[in-house]
Length: 144
Image 1: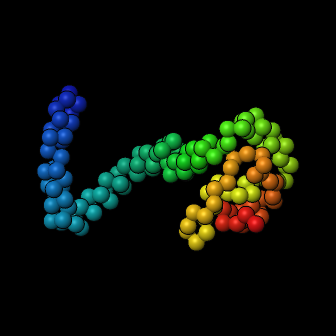
Image 2: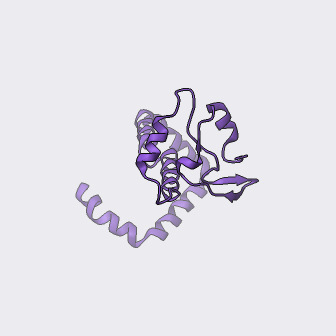
Image 3: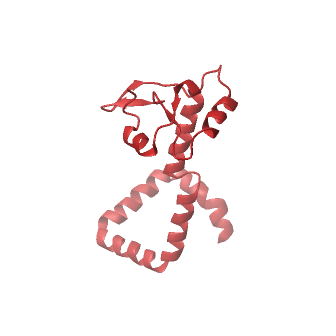
């Protein structure tokens, strides 16, 4: 049975994907309450396993938080001018006082009323050291 699942089932599913989806949707629609009851029972029986899987997914690199961080890091790399070295940027970050944070004077992606209005560079000329609270309040909507 195990060999069948590994060898033949994927090929069958690939060849009949739409038909299988339609069949499953029809089964669910025929008796929604029964389907929900089965799902609840399956969750109750495997609760610990399901929670462990969710935690693993949440901690993995494909979580929403990590995805957003990767997008932001890419944007930062794209907005570093060629005349600035990463060493200069690291120096600026290292010189940041302990009670301050590094912030862009003109945000990398400045938004106003949901519209992209400005694009700052990722370089020491565009950095500042504001208080963390002020930086959070400012977000990417203000650079005056």
